[in-house]
Amino acid sequence: MKRAAFTLIELIMVVVLIGILSGVAMISLRSQETVALSAAAQKVVVDLNYARGSALSTAFWYGVSFEADPANTYTVYLASNEVVVADPSNLGKPLEVNLAALFNGVSIQSVTLAGSNRVFFCPLGEAYEAKDGNQLANDGEIVLAYGNQTKSVFIDHNSGMISLQPVVAGTGEGEGEGAGEGGGGGGGGCGAH
Image (tube, rainbow, N blue to C red; front, top):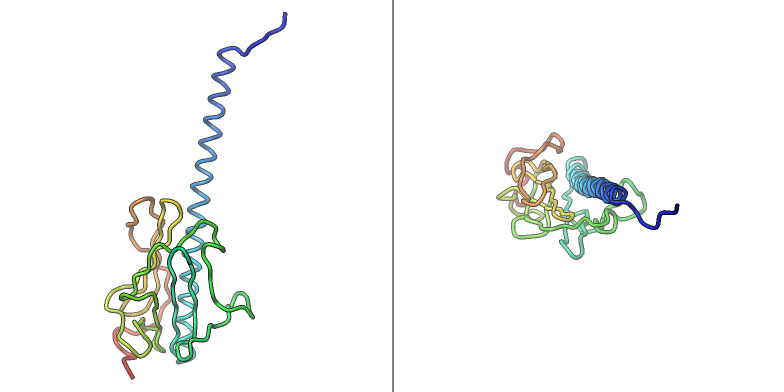
């Protein structure tokens, strides 16, 4: 005798299987968001440390300029003439990073750098509002976002050291984890010239 329909047990098994596969897909997607956001934040930290390290090693001022969403870009340049520096990981190319293109879905949600979108590193590695200007009065923060998750990159206003916050879902709050490099001064060593 031929069966013309599915039994109730077969239908329940299909629904359960679809539920399990959906759950696995959601976990995988959330994990992918976290990985992309973490990778983008690490890229920002590496490039900020590159600008800071270049200032320390060459005795020239270096700047980093951020453009938040929708541009989602930042540029590292020599502050004296605002010439974009070469990307150390892609020689011959300028160090202009489009996070949205490089890490699909990641955006620069906000930039808090003393009322500006730029930070400058003096030859002692300290962070300033402007070349030969005032040292940052407060820590700088660049907030990256992917979906409802955020991750912040911090610039210490005293030393210029860079640190990274763990990924936070929804609230945008969390505790920092060290990701900077050593060195740097401890307060106002470069000053205005």
